[in-house]
Image (cartoon, rainbow, N blue to C red; front, side, top):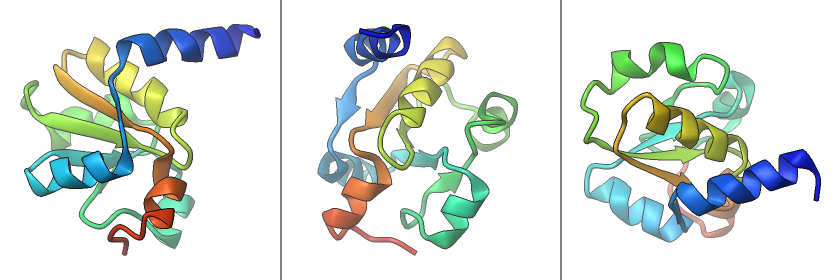
Length: 116
């Protein structure tokens, strides 16, 4: 196992992962989905009603969008790995209810969930 694979396994043990269906249900109940993909990826197509905060500036911009540390946050990317690292960062910043969306946007699209 590579060091990267080992780190991913460690994060999967501490960051709760949810399915795209669970993410959609939680979004309907006021959870915020953060798309951490690049701006280009986001502009092409994205989860309806998500917030785009690219992985590169997430830590610098999160408090402008979400100041409540108890807000339910779901991180999403293309396949579920960048968002896993983003979820870890948010947890380290003091956000208490952070989830990673397993499978990312690709799985969201396959499930035919709302996009724009």
